Length: 479
Ligand code: PLP
Image (cartoon, rainbow, N blue to C red; front, side, top):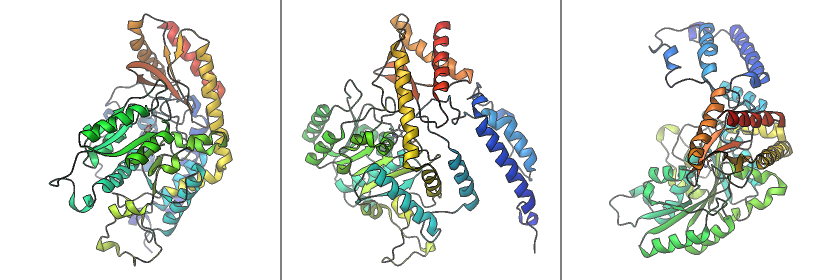
């Protein structure tokens, strides 16, 4: 028998040793992550400057490769898993998630068709149905897993487009006598709506941003007005994208009222619950799901609130067959099935052919925590967000910049002359991030710069939060 080395792989005993070393490294990393600088304070190009820019002609020993990894790469990473990393939504790493990703790497299967890996396909169907049940969606909603919410929303909008411009799959949009299509989303919605519109030939100028109210929720009266105006001008009003958990403030659009508009106007309702839909796992927040059953599609990213490692986005479509009809093609070389078979080929439900085995990590993490385990940690994140807001409220140098929603708090330093405040808020965030001891986000609300934290990391405790608050106060005092 040929030995592994001559085949280009590592001999088994050596591989086992390497695996143990990496396992130890990962365990140490996770145990001591709180002691690392969260992000490097370096200029663009600093990492590249330390690496060989010639492609490797001959193989390098793993000892040398890992020496570079520890010397250059790890110190150049932003450590999202650090308990004082409070940027974006605080998406969490979990130990079961790390283990599942290692196994996924070892299996390295392609989940494009049922035959290319039956378990990958069937596990995808299973975890999508678990999540559907957790979200309280009726059984006519079925899902598909993509990498990101942007891709999910693009596929949802493509399906919506097919409803107003039939046969676009075959004929495309150009050279046909079609009206201009319009999509509506609030001024707080994520830019993935525009990206989707660009990708499917609708055009970003045909995404109309509906004003939001004082709580950053879509103003439904304004939506109605825009639709009426567009109709008068002979636009074809195609879809509304309503958000549950907007990117800046985690505000929630009034879904039941928006659903009513969509019903009356015969428009597609897509819900972007990339972050916020996860809250449905908490029975005391079930009211958030009002109107979801009237949607045509809904996206959730379990890698944001629901503990699954990057990347995992679930798109649910009422009558998923419409999505399949839009994208299913059967290349000869895949030797597909007889059409009556029960095989699901997830490649039929989107643009991509090859697909990672993402379902495994969701299956491992969700079983390891159970809904109760996830809900109890989310509950603590919500408590911490409220506590942080309470600290802000009693310090008159700061103000809360938006209603506190989910794990997100937007706040603003206001203890300076008005004309300096935006710049100062931005500088405070930059200084804190450069310190390596905390990591915040800055965003703009109604044109004003605000600071923002997002809590979602399972390792973040009240003590971490208190330290970050102290750091913000000290930075402000020195400003
Ligand atoms: N929708 C919302 C509300 C978001 O906050 C984001 C990103 O943060 C997205 C969509 C896009 O997510 P993704 O990075 O998965 O494409």
